[in-house]
Image 1 (cartoon, one colour):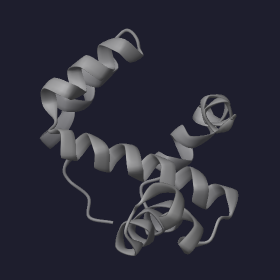
Image 2 (cartoon, helix red, strand yellow):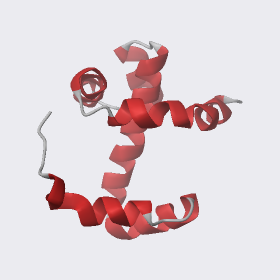
Image 3 (cartoon, one colour):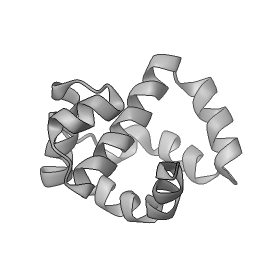
Image 4 (cartoon, one colour):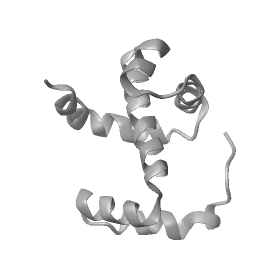
Amino acid sequence: MNQTSKDEHDLLYESLLHLKDAEECRRFMEDLCTVTELKAMRQRIEVAMYLREGLIYQEILKRTGASSATISRVNRCLQYGAEGYQTVLPRLDPIWEEKKKP
């Protein structure tokens, strides 16, 4: 994946680390990003979770509305990326399981 220099985005990453809880993060992200950007990021997280579960592209597309290009990109990141998904996804498992309950 395309890497950026460490110094380029430190302020962004540091700002995220200084948020106290999910509500502060939500408010910050709503100020920082457009509705479309937030939707795309939410969708990528869901796609990653479904890929981890072993769902096929068609099923993920049906459940998330993500394009095959998005699913493919997330899958590439899971396989060859900077290991960000591998770091955070297991930490989200309890939330993900709760979200899937009817």
